[in-house]
Image 1 (cartoon, one colour):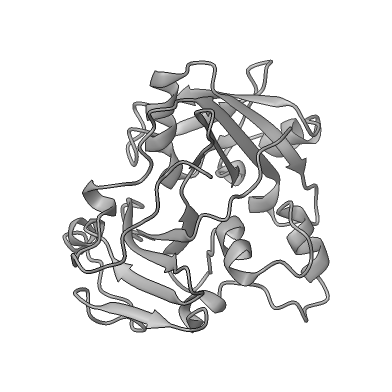
Image 2: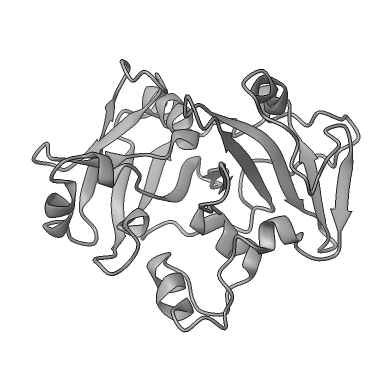
Length: 259
C-alpha cells in the first residue's frame, strides 16, 4: 500500500540562489492546532543571506513571527484555484482529490512559480512502526537526454533506484534516479537529497516507487509522482540546525512520528 501525505502541519520554504542554484531552507509555515497559520524564518535563512537572500516582501522581518487565520497570500498564490478548468486534472496528477485543502495541495505541488526562486515542501513522516514515508515529484527530466522516452516505458508501481551523484557541483548530496535496467530518468528534489542520503545509510533497501505517471500534456515537472518508504525508526526529521526557527518563541513542532 502506498504511503499517503500525512496531516503533518508544517511546511518548509526553500530559496534557490539564481546564480549558483544552491537551495537553502529559509522559513517554515506551521498550521497550528486551532487552524491558524504561523510563519517564521529558520536559521537556514542566515546561511542564505550570505548568498544574496533577502526577506520576502510579505514577511519583511526575519526576527518576527507572523500569524494569520487564513493561508497567507504568499502561499495561497502558489495553489491553483479550483475555478480553473484544468484544476481536476492538476490535482489528480498529484495523487489528490478535487476539493483538497489548499495547505495539503501546497504540500504536494512544491509551490514553485516562474516569478521567484521559492519552493515549498513537507517533511517526511515516521509511522508508529518506524517506517519513514513520503511523496515527491521527480526533477531534472528536461536536463537528461532521452528521459522522456524512458519514462514512457515506466508503469505505475515500478521501482526506481537511487544513485548518489557525489561529484555534483551544485549539491554533493544529489540523488539521481534510475530504472531497474539502469536507465536514468531524473533526480530527487534538492531539498530531499540530503535526507535521502541519511536514510540510505540507515536502510540501503529504501524503496522508491512510481505512484503515478502523468504523460503529456501534464507539466513535465509532474511527469512522475513518487513514493518512498524506508525503515529508519530513529530518523529525527527536519529538526534543529538550519531548520530551527530564528526566534525562540516560535511554536514548538509536534513529534516526528505519526500518531
